[in-house]
Image (cartoon, rainbow over all chains, first blue to last red; front, side, top):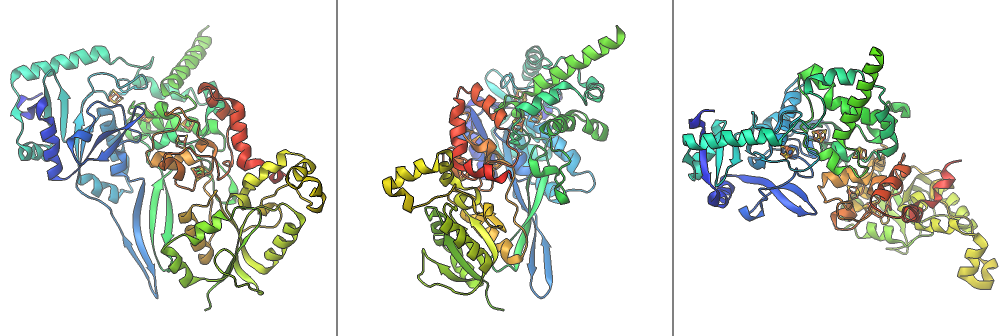
Length: 355
Length: 248
Ligand code: SF4
Ligand code: SF4
Ligand code: SF4
Ligand code: SF4
Ligand code: SF4
């Protein structure tokens, strides 16, 4: 932690800061929607912003990978004309929690792998991420400490951490330091602030305890033993296949491709929309065969997709612990409980082997 | 090339879906550029004696006259489209099937009920083959245009088989269950872009059950939210009673 990479912002100046940010470019930030729900929305003024919030209904992923995104435009005149399209604009995301930053890191990994998702990569360049560290759990659904997403590591331009009477801000990119300069509200950090930051992190390590009774490094073994675990059958009864858990997950990136023509039937666009492995048509192929008809198989796939497959391919766990899937599931399927059940069942099996 | 000839017909229904078509606004002019409407009782008095390229049929089939009439329309149409919940799934007319037909007749027509013979309500595809389905009570205008374009391009239209929740989440609505209200979204076919929830209402389930609904699971959910089970059954029967004729 180098002091020269840190700045101080008085708490009373946060409104000024947000309003100035809004003059630099479009700003999206967490806004309260009622009934303990929040959403990232473009803001007109600082008052709309909730500095204290639980993870938004859908993650800020929506700015990187729009729910509905045009891919190409075509016209079917005498000759076929096809023009790829990329929709992007300069945007500052303010108040992104570390779990959601981890989510964007997961997307970066996959979408810059071959075949590169060019539209995503272009859009990403135009988005500035200003993080906001959590000093306490958002609620009981979070499991960010298990995956190490409760602390800022990388993947942001600026990171705001709230201390007693000011914010300490980590500058992590030139885009970030530009904002510090343009807004002109920050003071350099002193040694004392650095010590206060350190003290906060120590306090956090007492608050944030691993929420799952195992360690991350045991996940591959655990999942290799769990393909036929009884919990999948239980989920078969409970799950409604509504797809909410995948719609809200910051690390899901599956999409469906569709086409739309105008009423002349000559001009149109090809676009993609978010899609999900929990939904009936997802694994259906010609002839009506469905490779994953049972809800149990779909739920199992979801968990393997978060905790097993990507460890082999990318060396990363694809869960950020944000808790959205558990929060949104009206059937009460909770990620922490599912993992705990897998652990208990697999422990019992190992013991039986030894006895 | 002459424009495809299009006609609209209604059976047991409220004609609200045809009204949705008539009220579609500006795109209607573009529609009229590419099709020729030859019969549409709600907006014009002309009739057509020849064949149709596309017939849109609103309403469910509830008596022998209707059976004969829909068969004739089918014979005269290259493509037949079921328009709205009454036509696609039987809709609210299906509630009749929960009662004894004689009892129903007496309730409506009194002692002269014998002059008005009636049948169990059926959706259009339960009587004649249907090529395209436009669900909804009433239909969702953008979906009508999408289906129309599919028909004119000669490609199929797939009614989404997943639930309304999918669209609702992408619209980032506050879930009705968070507000403490029951919503039929989790077991109802999508395609309306979660129209009602976007406007502050629950989903009534008007587009019919998804292909593979976990109704037992939903009963458990309702138990957790302390909502009586028979409330759900009534909501499902409101639109889906005719589903039992699909099983054959
Ligand atoms: S949110 Fe719950 S009920 Fe819906 S698909 Fe996911 S696990 Fe199943
Ligand atoms: S699986 Fe659940 S907790 Fe993990 S990142 Fe996705 S929504 Fe968040
Ligand atoms: S899951 Fe962790 S990092 Fe994410 S909002 Fe909750 S406490 Fe913050
Ligand atoms: S409001 Fe209804 S449709 Fe929307 S997510 Fe909740 S249950 Fe599903
Ligand atoms: S939200 Fe539900 S009730 Fe409303 S139009 Fe859609 S399916 Fe019908």
